[in-house]
Length: 113
Image (cartoon, rainbow, N blue to C red; front, side, top):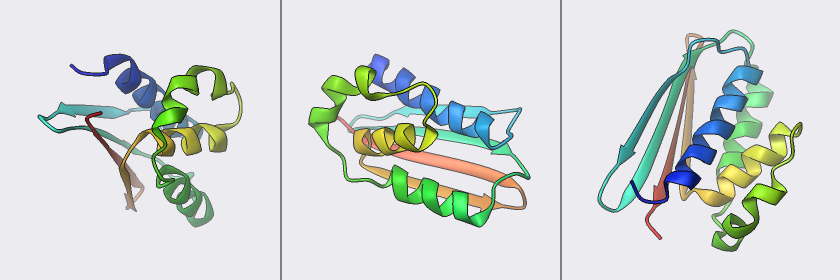
C-alpha cells in the first residue's frame, strides 16, 4: 500500500471527528486503487447538526497542498478538530460527506503522488 503512513494518519483524524460527533460503531473501508486511495468512513449519529456538517464539508474540501504533508505531524494539534479537518482537506484531492437518517458517510480521495 503506497503512502501507508499518510493513509493511517488520515483514517485516524477522520475517526477522531466521528467520535467527536457521537459515532460509537465506525466502519472503515480503504481502497488502494491503481491511481488513487479512497477512504470511506461510515457510522450512525444523532449529534450532527447542519452547521457542523457544512463546516466539515468546507474544511475537508480545502485545496490540496502537497507541501503541508511534509509538516503534517507537527501541525496537527491535540484538541482542535477544525484544524485537523482542514489539514486532512489539504492532504486529499476531494471529499464527499453525506448525512441522511442519522447515517454519516465520509469519503475522501487521494491521488497518487
